Amino acid sequence: MNSDKRYELITRNLQEVIGENDLRKLLKGKKEICVYWGTMPTGSISIAYFFPMLKIADFLRAGLKVKILIADLHAALDSVPWIDLEKRYDYYERAISLILKTIGVDIKKLEFVKGSEMQLKPEYMYDILQLSSLTSVHDARKAASEGIKSAVGENVKVSGLIYPLMQALDEEYLKADIQFAGVDQRKIMVYAREYLPKIGYDSRIELMNPMIRGLVGEKMSSSIEATKIDLLNDEKTVSKKINKADCVAGNPDNGILALLKYFVFVMKEDGGNKFIIERSEKFGGNLEYKNYEEVAKDFVAKKLHPLDLKNAVAKEINILLENFRKDKKLKELWKRAYA
Image (cartoon, rainbow, N blue to C red; front, side, top):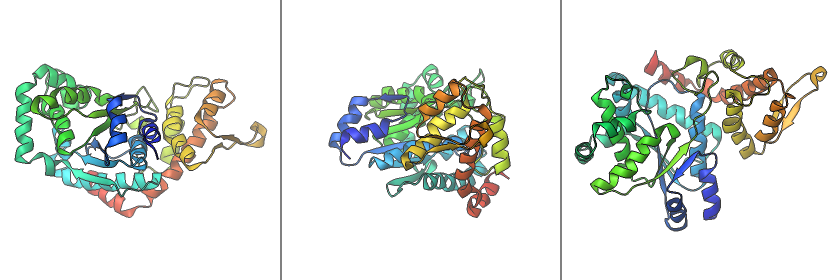
């Protein structure tokens, strides 16, 4: 795969790339490029994790070294009880591995990193203190505003101000060339580009996924039960949540089409498969689509009924979740972490 094709694969479906020219140069020159993505082991994992994992799969297929930081200390700073950190780390590692297995990607160049094993080292803490001496409360709070709950409101905890400094420094201590995150992390990523050079480290390339419309409301969020489909939800629960989703006939601005565009069709097209909507003959029979644009066109033209679309999407999701429902180890780890 040449550098142009690797670039297209790395950046497809992203909302923003900061350092585009640097990325192109890296792809032409550096033998091994490292990208990192971080997540806090907070609540149980939902299908929303498929969105970043599909990009992780792209990075792996493009030959990048991928490090997944399971940021246990970050989770503690975001109010997860310290006693639960180890249990949730184990659950997250298992669940994320199963997602990538379900996607069907070679994970030989994937590495999991536990945040506390890196972040409690003396040199890391020294650099945190360096950053804290250069960063104003205003800048730390601004960077953290969309990344951590405790940074919202007047009664901001000190932990909320430390959080963005740590996320910036993670780029250096993970020896990453690239950080990947959702666009809601943009302020922290911009902070990292500005402040890391002030303590002698290079700024990194920043890749950002778009925020996905929720099943109910504007944003897909694991903290909103109505818009969260857990990896271990049974078939009836999945179908019920999908059927209750906002989906007005003719209006493409809904979470069902977002799931279809950024989740279902990415996997369908990569596998060379079509998206099939099953309908009885009296309603015109089955429909087959080879890309998202065809579905959206029919939906806007009201040739495709919202209920038929919901039923087809629910079926696709339930098929994908079979791996998780059958995994006894994942269920055991979930119970340890959350029961």
